[in-house]
Length: 305
Image (cartoon, rainbow, N blue to C red; front, side, top):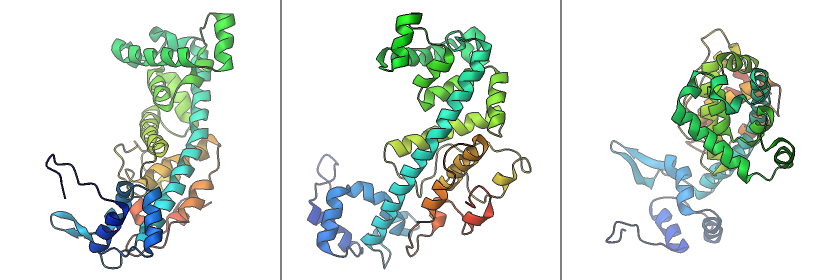
């Protein structure tokens, strides 16, 4: 039901349970269902029961397929929470490694290369784009309470060399600085990652979105991501060739992470495979909803951990 202004009518927890039951979901024990809706928002859960809704020629109906259970929806929700936490965790050492590599290589060019677009690549010649990046960096510098920043304010007039400044950057600004870097610097960092510079640029942009999804408690398991990575030509990276997936799906994005963990020699490459193996046994919702094939764990060395 909708109000006159088009906003949906408020429903109590009991009314929400009744609505799910009327649409064909087995809600199980009512007290347990009530406790679930008190800890997890109804509309957050709706993303996990979406694939259980009947499909028609005009789209998804409100009614559920026969056999749909709230307990299966919660199992998917809990799996996604584990996957999200694991993904965020394994992205951290990748981010730190890229920071270290980029700061080191830009330092070879000039200790303050990040402050002089003339020392950077052609992308930094776009004054408005570079200025926005620099404004963001300077804001972070002013807000920082890091000891190393206080030291540079006291001893060096507040000017941080690039290998220190890079520690203030979030993933988005790090990616932008990589794009500003001279091609020689980009190539050196990308080569360590087993990629070309354009490929690594696209991977960093895509994984920044994945990281933000994880940080903001978004849904991973059946998501189609907005950015697909640029991939090496077939034959260049057999570990990637062996993976059968749609690279815009979550499993494709996770494979990028496994690849970078392997090439950078950081983190825990067994963590994501272990979590994926806990995908719940839910009728009609196989692991292919993540974008993985049925033999995902053995098809590539990246996942055979």
